[in-house]
Length: 571
Image (cartoon, rainbow, N blue to C red):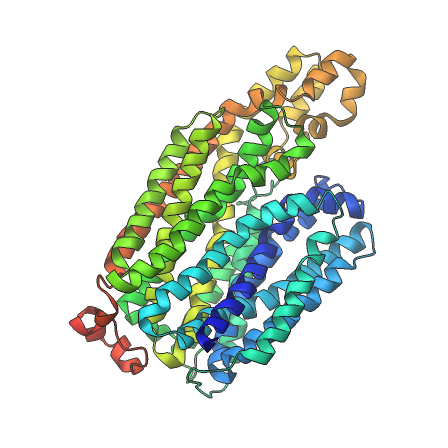
């Protein structure tokens, strides 16, 4: 088998494994927390919940650029192989968790962080390995297939987690071990470095300032969606403000450091290249629109639509993953096709058209009633998957083709950093918009609904004043939200009233109106990001086939000079 196909198949397995694990715990969280004996909705445990969801994403966002730079310096295959080993070892330790309570939660979060370190090595170097292995006229196909694994894995993880979690939550982590072991051996035996290597000293100050600044920023966003005092969210809390403002200050210092060191972590001069800069802007905005969509759809399905259609709350996590499959199917169909066609006709039309289709799909989602008919919902999800698939492959190929051969690892890491950071930002934005929408109308609607069914006024008022994020988390985890909110009050009510309040119709009907307000805000935000990404894609795309692209081993000066940004040679 030619080496390029070996490289493609192994890196695709690596990315698929990493991205499946980025989402596999989302659906399995109720089973995991039940298994270790923790109530994730208890006030002292929400930190465990947030870090089980966000820890993997935060770590990969912070580390991928540095690991890509290490690949340029010491060999991309060497760093990629190390990632496979770290990821597999972490999966073993996650699968053998034997503790319970707080100790188990901290153990799982810690090894999820280590697993994210392995995933960052894989994500940072896979695109660069493929760009080295494939000729320019086939890179769209190769990166398109790789991109299918990267995006589809995050949705397949939902279904796999939903299937394995109820059987035994340890299987959620154990499933990665045989694939990781096989991929590790295969990578060490078959992969080899074919790209240019640039020996250089490590930029320690750049690494430190980038890690501190980005971690602070992402931690601030993570805690911003939690309530603070009497506020429904924590954006005004001293911790969140310190993290966000302090993180931004440190990141500004990082940029200044990078402009002065001999071998910078972040190759700032690459941003003089129009295709690289605008391609990454489009990728960042597309990830902002796509990232929070997954969470919004899960809450919509689990908290409202599935219970209204006869599913018990405890069954909704698995079925939410199944009902979202048209999104994955659309992506699986469009990404490879657009990769092949963009190799021949250029990236501009496909990347731009993909973002426009995605914007239309978000408009259609906003137009759907809360209690939608599933065929219409599935068709819109399919359209969204097709749009994202059309965009992803040409975008990745065009960004990687714009890089000089000795900067592909750093460039791929920078692109992965933007994408993974955008996923965390997107979750924060979408949750914030949802909470703002819910907080305007939910308290009054909830209080009136509880009073009508016999809940004492004091208890109804107390429940109505609880932060709406608790309702979102309960729906997201597949718990019965009213049961979680009322707790022991249910035992004081007549059995028929208690049964009605915790049944499949009361909460979904109660929350539908307020939820629609938050949903509309979230979808309009996604429409805006997709439209701006479409504009960036139009001006970033090469507009032609491989004959009009810069040579794969062009000197850096050819790619970063003003003439390369605007002249005919860059196009």
